[in-house]
Length: 509
Image (cartoon, helix red, strand yellow):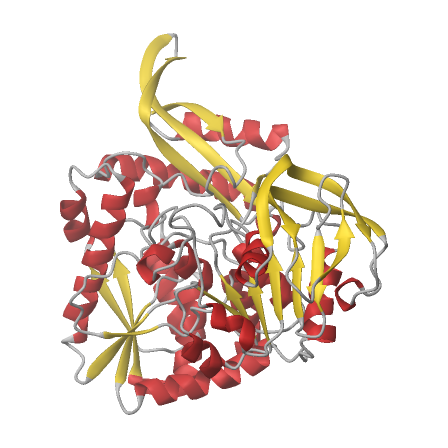
């Protein structure tokens, strides 16, 4: 495995994705990790991520410098490179010319990191400080017109640094550089497969649960479906699946999920009817974080109520994924900025009567789908677009009411119908409707109207870490707009969201 130290880079998940694309397992940890813990993890290599801070800023992230004496190969990227140099006695100074964006990279000497890389290539820079003096034992291996030390190494100690970001697609041969670090420097083997994951996960679930029983929150989405089948493979009938009808689901979803799981999976399934409870708790709540926390707490409360009906239950299973954990990093002591808390990470009450079982918490979404295929889950379930844990509550901007839910459900159904009919459902990462908290003037039947606005959101992405707005055909957008306005009472305007992530998020809340 490879250990990635998170110094706060917006690209740290991309580093992990690039490593795993080469079938090498990796984990992201905060810089507060202890040397003892690192040694227990036994990584073949360590990557120090970039970050927005300057090493001279008060409060900038640091790590135990003993990491450089463990004999483990280390690759520092951007801030991680600067920190490595600074910690080992080199010098980092404010750059005379800051570098952001594309840069021409000139490889100056032979290096294992640049094996089979073109000596003149393109890289992506994002830094305000530069390395002006290398520690003893280091040599410069690459430069750009503005940065003399764009890459350096101490090959004897297997310490390497890149001032640019090899993990982004803008660095044309970045994947090759990462592969060189994994295989030439660290001597990793490409053994990370979903078959291997399933075998290991089944053993870990059995060890963690022992003779206990598990309740799982089954939503019908990819994450909970895969978690359910995986846990069922490990412990069989000692898993009870609970479907919480929270009143925040899409049209017809409750009926569909119950039918599919009885037909395909034959799992023990309990349906908890809690629509009135969730809506009552959400009354008056408009702040998105408050809504998420209310839903998270209520969700666990309902589970605990159901758990008391099943004798011997001691674990609550969730389909938490790695991006959920990373984006909620503040709860784990890391420096990455928190964009939003997640239903299955940030909404848990401190005193929970059930222990957590999260078998997917180190996987990205595309890996979860591959696990689902390995487990034999039907294709139409595996390729369902992601749906947020808090449901339509975070697609209604402002207060959640029965009337507003009804409007959004109808609009969302029309949108998805048209996306499927156009054959684009699998091409899109997500496509959904959002109900805005404003009204606009319109004309319908020669009369003035003052009604709601629906926003359409459709994005393409590989793993939700970054996303681009989908260039849907104009004719399709026209059909969606016409149908929503004509068929959904209370809507007189439809708009299309043309924002990418970053700077926007995929969901509006």
